[in-house]
Length: 141
Image (cartoon, rainbow, N blue to C red; front, side, top):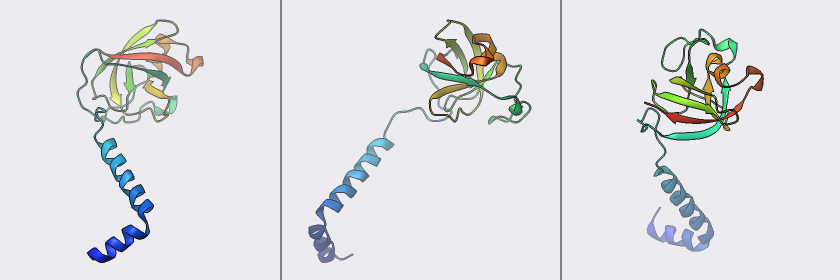
């Protein structure tokens, strides 16, 4: 677009150009956020709070995101961003019961949840009938 045509367009539609500029600025600012990237190291002691659920039986034996077979009997978990192998202390905030798990998968894929646990891990902190419980997760190592 030539300079004269661009100037005419800007004068004819200033609100459209302003809105476009504000959208570009918002995208730039959002892109500069400091959320941890998938697999980025998180310091020991880092905590998060939210809801925990557990894997259904249909996932037993399937491959997890890190390539190992999922085993309902092991104390493992899925987290959206923490590196595979990270050990977490997961505490049910209603009962105070806790379990130590190892991250070996990605998820959960429900926005309100922060972690998916194997059924063995979930049973350590709550009844499977509860389905979802409030938890605090803390990075151990």
